[in-house]
Image (cartoon, rainbow, N blue to C red):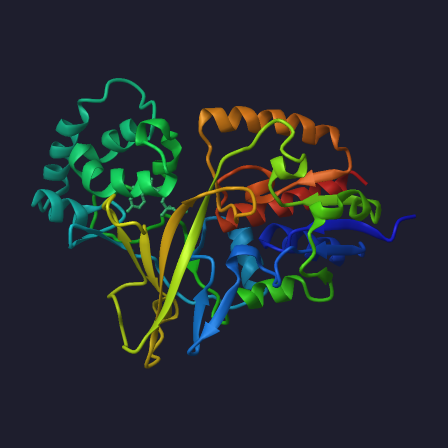
Amino acid sequence: MKQYDYLIVGAGLFGAVFAHEMKKQGKRCLVLEKRNHTGGNIYCEKVEDITVHKYGAHIFHTSNERVWNYVNSFCEFNNFINTPMANFEGKLYNLPFNMNTFSQIFGVTTPEEAKAIIEEQRSEIKGEPKNLEEQAISLVGREIYTKLVKGYTEKQWGRDCKDLPAFIIKRLPVRYTYDNNYFNDTYQGIPVNSYNQLIDKLLDGVEVRLNTDFLADKDYYLSLAEKCVYTGTIDGYFDYALGNLDYRSLRFETETLDMQEFQPVAVVNYNERQIPYTRIIEHKHFEFGKQEKTVITREYPANWEKGDEPYYPVNDDRNNALYEQYKALAENEKNVIFGGRLGQYKYFDMDKCIESALEFCEKELSNE
Ligand code: UDP
């Protein structure tokens, strides 16, 4: 009999939920984490008494009542609603695309007028949209595409909108009401005592080894447990045997400023191609902070190279096809479960990640 039932690689949301649920069932779990902290990209740090989202803005939103009740059983959430704005050539526009945006761009006041303009502009797209550019034009017309989508998207992904999958832009609501809520989900908020509380509670009583690189001694670590849950990059697990999958990385520049407020809202996107960052977040606004100083972070998209932190899978045709080949290899690794954004090469939001971890647990337990 081995020392552990489950070796869990990665102390992010997927790994933490899996470990928590399995520990509850009496399983012996060991979590390995490469970084010097748990929580993956939802990890926060306090600066000037402000909770700083160290790896970019994380706003929890879900329509899954089970997931909402689940996270609320570990920590209290505030009533933050994400209402980001877009800065294009010095002017601010509301997001997501709604009547505020349409009246700012087209000068209209009614849904009917907005629809008529968009209907006319989208007529250039014939048939099913084949890529992100066509999808965006068919949702909001060419003018909004040019101002608020093209530059932002191309710098975020480092690719032409014609070479990106349509689904990425479908994440954003389009509404003919004056409603600036970025998400359509039933539930939304940010943990009152930061995401660290959520992770700490999930991992309470679970053995975690920080600063530990599983891939540096894979066979040894695998030998410790009956089964492994791996949440790192799937191509990394196989030592890139079939070639590299593409990821997008990010670089953050964080500054403390001696002023009460830097910008009027938590998130301002910078939608021109020429500005090298995609957005500035002002952390205190996520928790309605009244501190004397403020902390802001500029988010710069970056090419991913081996050794960098991967943030987003690039789900275009080439990468999806390569992922399928890796997935076939993964299916032969009978005692390893691949989970999370990197293990499943999927643009998961936090709620989907939790949902998926809970499903994997149930499947595991029902197979016993
Ligand atoms: N997007 C855009 N303009 C914006 C904000 C978003 O065109 O001002 C598009 C862009 O293609 C982006 C996608 O919507 O990749 C998803 O954006 P979201 O803010 O949901 O991404 P995340 O917060 O996950 O980085």
